[in-house]
Length: 367
Image (cartoon, rainbow, N blue to C red):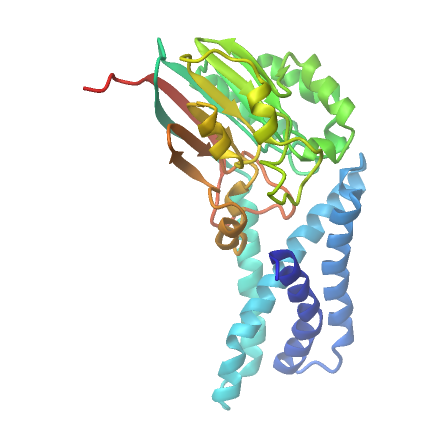
């Protein structure tokens, strides 16, 4: 049974259980209004996501999308809390039921509010990585998953750009999912990127394919950002390889498949020189073994959001074993960002929005 199937079953049970449990705990006369509310929240939110309505350039849809996302998590948290306390009322007959029901509602609302507050800020993390044959240090600001759209606009982007300016990087890499909604496709918003004084590069993520892809890529290019679509550019003594969003190989399943390309097949086709430092940028942290076979020194990825919020933070490792932080296989280092923004419910709980500063330093010769 897949995680997707488990999630759908959980939602179906929630539509029945949450109203049933609250009716018993709070002494309500009817449960159907709660059942209608629960079904509308869970069903309405999934409808927005699976039909792609959330990408439309419509402010009303954006507000509904964000409100339903938070209510969606509230219902799921409430389900878990009510289920966890259910044995108490079964075993302890005198325990007051009403406080349990009210407490479940209050605690669920608290965690959703806390997650929403956490989602409004980001941390800047620093990572020093030794690279063979590197002539001089190179600083890269790595920022996947900003998700400009219904949740992120000018104010948040300006804060990201301020952080870039403070770090004084040699280059900036927006490694996929820079945009997730047509509502962000405004020339004025993208003109802000011209503030950046370093070289800027972009690779596609899966979300750029769910919207007006051509319009998004045009605005990115017009902003002075170099788009790398399965190609290599040499800069600052580093061979920077930017991959189109793709699957690792033809045997691995990808829930976000947008094309038939694979890292296994495409990476060997990109010409580069042996003996020169190579940095591979691919939105999703898959195909690391092919990076190792291709003599890549560093692979930079995002996509996972570190699970974004509980219980995703506990489950993400079953979908992406390398989902946050630093990993090493053979001679390649993989650095996975938690992402600078959010998608879906506007929350961060157990994970943080992150801007990564990657300091490439010359490796010391082995003694």
